Length: 208
Image (cartoon, rainbow, N blue to C red; front, side):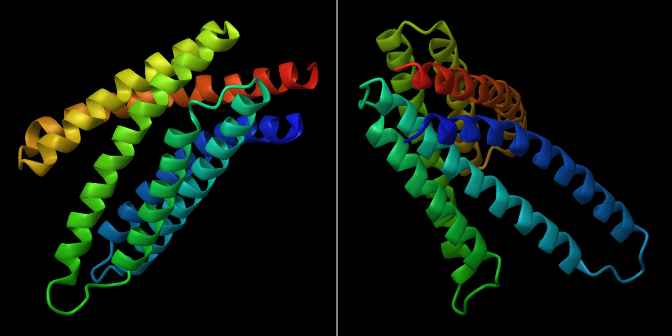
């Protein structure tokens, strides 16, 4: 993989952060507009939300693909399995979201989709924990404090997300929101560091 492709992956991280913020405002505006209507049409909200999810997952897959390319450039392949697992699970989550959002299948199909989505979501969190440990290993491999920090931040965020998912599956909704909110804030910081790590790493790749 070229250094330019890795650099694009890093830039896309920041594009994703801005896009998610913009989508958040759009969704909030759509909800306010719907609240003022006597007969709101949920199709507008669903369409905007679906577009945001598709964009998020597509960029996530690309970013991890370029991360794998960066690691390979420095002879580090221990992260291959967790990265590929994350990419596959992201694709599965996308398919489940698209098909699950298309409407419930007869005979309790919606419940099946919800259960499968919960399982794949938890598996994604576990794969991300695996990647976080591998990222710390990459930091040790190349002597990068930045990648060590990326791994540690992701690890902290994903442990909280794992706890939140377990509580959610156990029906403890009250604490779930707090855990997931904290996890989201921490992972956002990890994303910023991840983007910087790819951009800095691409420069070092160009010098190899």
